[in-house]
Amino acid sequence: MDRIPILKLGGALIVSIQVDMHDRLALALEEDLTAMIARTGARGVLIEISALEIVDSFIGRMLVSIAAVSRVLDAETVVAGMRPAVAITLVELGLELTGIKTALNVERGMALIQVRLSEEDDGHGSDRDRHED
Amino acid sequence: MTVTKTEALPVRSGDDVVRVRQRVRALAVEIGLGLVDQTKIITAASELARNTLDYGGGGDVRMETVLAGTRKGLRLTFEDQGPGIADIEQAMTDHYTSGGGLGLGLGGAKRLSNEFHIESTPGSGTRVTIARWK
Ligand SMILES: Nc1ncnc2c1ncn2[C@@H]1O[C@H](COP(=O)(O)OP(=O)(O)OP(=O)(O)O)[C@@H](O)[C@H]1O
Ligand SMILES: [Mg+2]
Image (cartoon, rainbow over all chains, first blue to last red; front, side, top):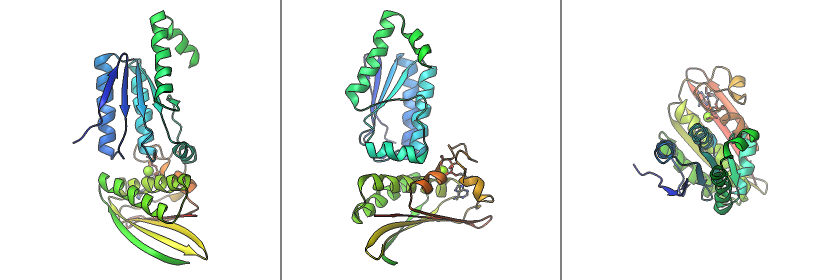
């Protein structure tokens, strides 16, 4: 079975979803990401979805679940590059991407993760996180 | 209203669900739906195809391009011979799920379509029809 490659860049993991995912592929990605966060101690996960033509409740649930697991493992998930038509459709579908930060594109997504990484270097990252919640 | 084209696809595997999305997209483009409307009908189709697969035990989808006067539309009918739905109102309620989902598929598909119709007979199956007009 094919799998979606995960890149490690500094303290972040980066995934770019380029194919219309069937369900097994989506589940495999969730598994692989979880294992890799645990193994690498990554603090940020960037999921780039500009190639995705739709996000349905299944993919939405996968994203929410990746974010939830990441949070438990002390990593933050950012979804970048969602197409405007997809965003509009998600709202009408009724899906809320709870716990997920979104960014317009990869650069802005990485910037969000960098902020978190540098806050941690300063030693007060976790305090800020608690205020946000 | 006239049907200008009819196609059918099986919905029996996860790969079939992907194929249904791709075919619905092609037909939506063909009748000239805009990008947002394309996205809505593909998403609705994806939800219904997955229900057909997961709860209906598999089935098929009929895809029709239709013409009402000068208006073009895309009509999709998902049908299975599965266990059916005893309480349709409950199934349509957002966040109701019997299978660990988000319970958004049916309600979402309705919101994403211009027309929505569901028929189900416990013990003999379910048929959901949606349409999106240009
Ligand atoms: N084709 C079907 N045959 C039998 N039962 C169905 C069918 N489609 C839907 N249902 C029932 O209706 C419920 C609601 O469906 P809906 O698609 O709204 O939510 P879900 O599939 O449970 O979760 P989600 O779609 O958000 O992942 C299902 O949990 C199931 O019990
Ligand atoms: Mg569903």
